[in-house]
Length: 285
Ligand code: NDP
Image (tube, rainbow, N blue to C red; front, side):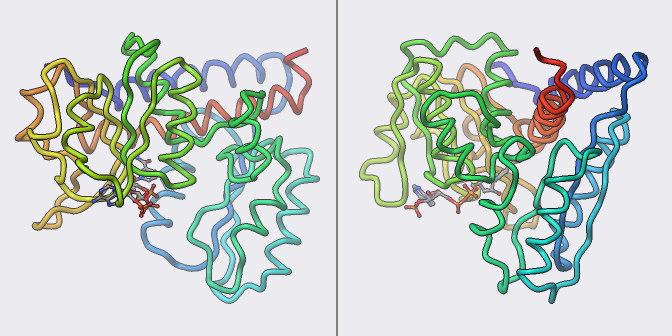
């Protein structure tokens, strides 16, 4: 069994981002700029925002943090987005969800300039993904694809099973696997015989948020298992959807939790911000 080390691959992505940034600065250009917008005091969001800021700082990107009050009105929030859309120093905008209840997430998503939308929150980017057009890909499923690519895992013609159909993970994950010519099955809470479907998978990607649900009855010895989930077990310890102890020795390769898909997400945020920057600065032409 091979452990797919997302932490190590993510570090390579961060190093590459830092080097690319340094090459622009050496030419006298400004550094890429990422705005992170947060409203309210959700403790998990605060940790995610801090990690994103740290990664930006290490890559020498300029990061701009906007911490809005829990009671900020929807109008004020949208005004800030509009301002950031037009700010020349800002290439990417990331809105940390969940947002306070008075703010409609869909309105915020639609208000983001699609070419600054580095977490693919705007439905324009969802549509581009669906149609195979150039745009931004959501960081987590994009991170899974990068992990598979850098581990030289062939996808063409393989049976891929995705557990979960959320807009931020499951659905885009399925589309990205399809784009790489896998034959994709999407499962959800109403799927019948989940273990039977999973056992037939060459690639199993789980994004359900169900602690340790995937045991040895869901896998086969040639399978690649990608665990996207971040859950807590009965002792409050971080775990995925996969019962790692029971499954690891029974598959060909597996991502651990933590240290698998999680670190890839931030790496892809840096990659997307660089893409936004190159487009904004007209460096791609
Ligand atoms: P959602 O709750 O939005 O979606 C969960 C999906 O799993 C739903 O489609 C649901 O089906 C399905 N599901 C739930 N229970 C079962 C079950 N028993 N059998 C089959 N399907 C089931 O979650 P997210 O997509 O937002 O996140 C999924 C997981 O990924 C979470 O653990 C989250 O923490 C993690 N995550 C990790 C990230 C990272 O950076 N590594 C980033 C984002 C999320 P139905 O649609 O029928 O309800």
